[in-house]
Image (cartoon, rainbow over all chains, first blue to last red; front, top):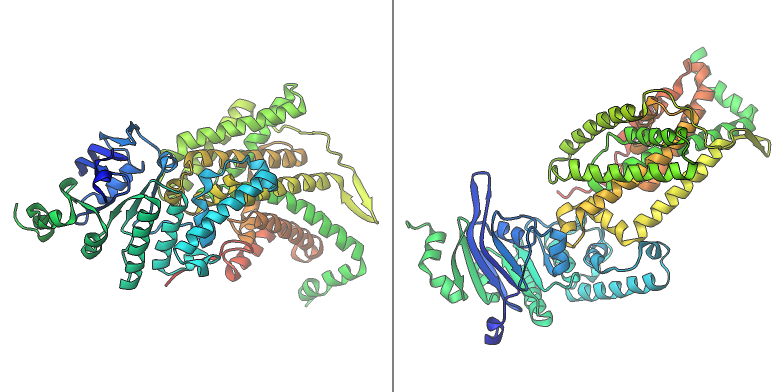
Length: 262
Length: 311
């Protein structure tokens, strides 16, 4: 990340988000901004509210307090599909793919909202609808090449190994050509080689398409390697936010992770 | 010995003696099966998109038919009555999404299933409240005279019903396989969260499926109603759709069609040729026994998605 990028207006700004489920305060007073083209890691112990924060950003949850500003514009109670249409894509902690469909169809589903032709044209598949279909297909093939999953193009994703499923899920998110990509533990349950591949894809996506990325990750080695900035959550509060080196040296972070007395 | 002969010998002997009659029975069965397929289709649509077994499908058929016949009796022209009844089913679809599905989002499937049971009772009562509980005869001018083609007797009404169902199914198949909405539907069927995350508006899709299921129910209701009169027992044809779904698979549109045809032919042939030996009324239970046998051999049905388990 360059100095100029950091100075640019953030594409996403959440401020003073508060959210509780029954008596449990999942998030309280969390403010966070994401700049264009940056890679932000969100870390924290289990139950710190990391996934809740992603859910707030893409509209699965509607927080009781605070506001979300996307490219300078405030949206109240955005629906998940609206967030997707504005350019926020995401993957899930427990892989949420369309299990009955093939890899190709799964990634194609990321193009659905870009299909403009009337459904009657699509049904008979002639003329403009045919051209549109082919364009999307070509785009998806580029993603398949990029992620090196050509061999499993026609395999139903339910049959794939976990690491590959995560890769297909990333492919589906990329097919949406997002401006912000939310990755919820993209490397959970992977072996070292799979993690290395995934790191490479994330860095490439960021570099080639300029996509801003916010990822939740537990592997500290990975976090320190690929992220430009790290935000730390603990018990629903943000306790640190800065460069990997700063965060690593922060006493509050050390306390949260090692369980020292506060 | 007599019984064994009556089961294993006599029926085949009589088939051999009169092949033309066998063809007649089979065609009769195929055409009757189409009517089962029509009802089963409504189930498949909703099951595919929301993973819910819609207990109220039979009542939706009844309600749609009641609305249609009620409008006709008040002097509304045929086409207009169809359009209005279709619009009513769309409104019901919207209401179901708003009042039933939205508050229950992310709940267990069994809870949604229970909600559809409630819906069945509601629609049943509401329909009778608005249109009364009498039997309404329905005649939309489909000829009922039997035709004789190549020496084989065919019921003209069944032929029309088959043509209508065929058109409907072809249209739905194209819609589901080819269009963006169809793809979105399949995506929603697989995973709600993931579907939303790629920009599919879940609520809109639900309104679409329930409305389409309502309109399919309307067509089924009109067909069954012309045959039996529009009355409460129409909602019970939904019970016949169950074995059809077990045969064809809950998630497959072609499965609903083929399943319906198998059940139709199976029960007619069994009734005509084995009825005398087993004391008749085979038609009432044959489909269920067939479905039971199928569950043992191929639990996902003929066309259902294979049940994939990773161990």
